[in-house]
Length: 93
Image 1 (tube, rainbow, N blue to C red):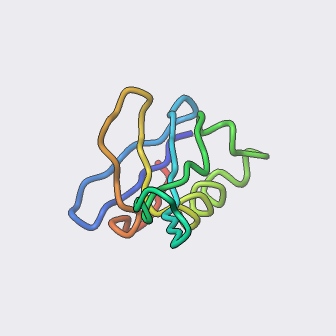
Image 2: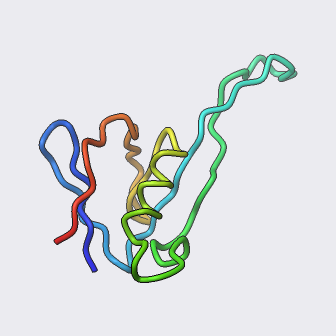
Image 3: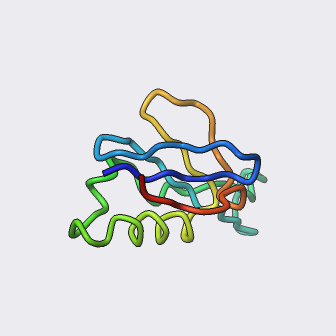
């Protein structure tokens, strides 16, 4: 299984069974005591297989995660995040 996350700039990111993904959701709180009102909550951290139920729903699970997240990081040692609005499509090899 290989899925491709196709970005609006023409790049593609390959997702396999072993791909580690971290997903973040934007949050804000006017009740924050340290003036840090804007932050991200981690909503998923793990291998692609961790979020999958059956072989038939690979694209649906990835689409759902991307729809719920504002930022994602692909790869365990990657320190670069990707804004999910930069994703154009998901395709299967």
